[in-house]
Structure formats: C-alpha cells, structure tokens
Length: 301
View 1 (cartoon, rainbow, N blue to C red):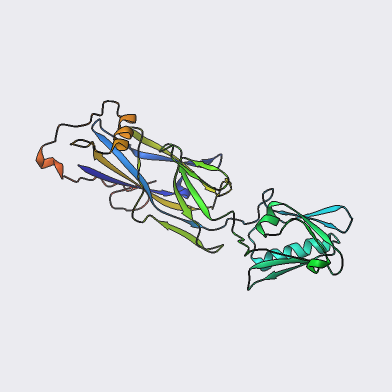
View 2 (cartoon, helix red, strand yellow; view 1 turned 90 degrees about the vertical axis):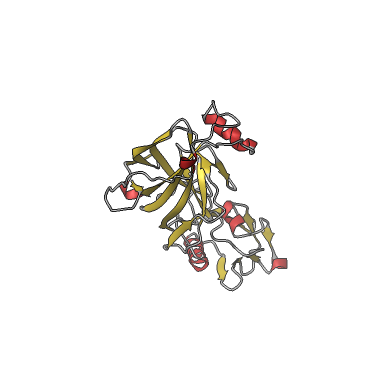
C-alpha cells in the first residue's frame, strides 16, 4: 500500500521569514499510522541566481607592498563580477589609492595580470589572491615585474552549489569545502548565469530519506551557499515528495534499512504478518487540496 504526497512550496507564501529561515505550515498534517513509514526527497527547485562571487569579509581584499614601502590593501565591494568587471574594480581602487600597479584580465586564457613598470612588488596571500591564483611572493625584474595567475581563474569558486535544508525532516549532512550543511536534503548545482533562473530537477537514481517522526505539520527551510552564507533570493519554489508505505511484509534483508526503521519504530520486527492479498497493491491518494490554486492531489503551501 503506497501513498504519494507532493508538497508545493512557494517562498512568497511562507508563514514567516525569521532568522534567515522560511517557515511553512503543512495543512492538513502528514501523519503516519503505526504500520507505516515515509520516504521523502526534493523533486524540484527553482530560484534566480543572484549569488555574489565577491563577498565582504570572505574574498574581497588584495594586499600589495611596492618596493621597500609599507603594505597597502584594497577591498572590493560585494557583488557579482565577470573577469573584466573584476579587473576594472581592482584598477579603479588601485588608481584611487595611488598604488602604481596595472591590472589586466586575459579573457582568452581566463587569467589576471598585475604589473609595475619598473619596481619590484610583493603580493600577500589573501582569499582573493588565492581565488585569482596569485603566488604570494615578490615579483622582480626576473618576472618582468609581472604577477600572473598560475592557473585558470574560477570566478565562481565559492558559489558552485546551494544546499536545501529542512530542519524538521532529517539530520543528514552535505559536506562542502568549508562547512557541513546540517539537515541538507539536496545539493543544488548552480549552472545558470548570474541573473538567470537556476532550475533543479531530481534525476534517477533519486536519493530518498526516511522520515524519522510520525507526523509533519511544519517545515523550516534554509538555503545555504558553499561558504555557509544564507541565500535569500527573493522568491523560490520547490516540490517535496513524500511516499508513505506500509512496513515491509517479509523479512528485511537490508540491515541498514532495518536499523533506520527501528530508530523511529522501536517495535519493528524482522518480519511482519502479511496484509490480505487484495490490499497489497492498492495505491490510494489523499483528497485534493486546493489552496490558492487548483492542483491535482498536492499540498499547496
């Protein structure tokens, strides 16, 4: 016996937005009977890609020392920059600070150059210099007073993914390069250009999670980037799918599955009394829920 419930989420219809989290009420509640368990997953998600690649306090600073002078730094305003846009911002700050360096972006090789006409200079290691693949050292006449990216520059280094987290549903984690996304049920690759819509659709094989409680009446959603920053796109939509199933009728061969089921169903046994044959393949649906728009068999939140 299997029952599928699709919960449609629209951030504009959230109950509240507090502490960078979207709150949704699930009505009617999703309730499991004693002989049921539930699997769930994120079926789809969409939002505009407005994630900056230069973030204040994260990767916005370059530090230079010209000759035997003192170190000087420039800090770039938070935002999304193309290679050409970033080099323009850097050069503007260099000029404004009377720092005699020239910045050039190589759009063919996707690299940046910083140069002086005739004086050695040193680049100090910062998160931005790392992103630009600048080796932190002194650049002398041997280098023709030129510092160049050692590798192709990934301007989206810190914004490759979004993590969709649901506080109430799971303790599963997704590990990023700098943090652990607690309660993340999906890692959403950012494949759209800045300012375009990013669309995620679950594809086979779909990773599903087992619901660890017997009911769901509230959902708390948070979107996180690769550097653990909360992302608030203004509006996003998503579909969560819940599949309610009867506990297995026969012996559970998968010990991990048995362990999970026993974690929230302490009385789960290795085998169960079969249901009448007429009920084994009976697929049923809940009543239509029509709130705000006409949908077929969903929850619209």
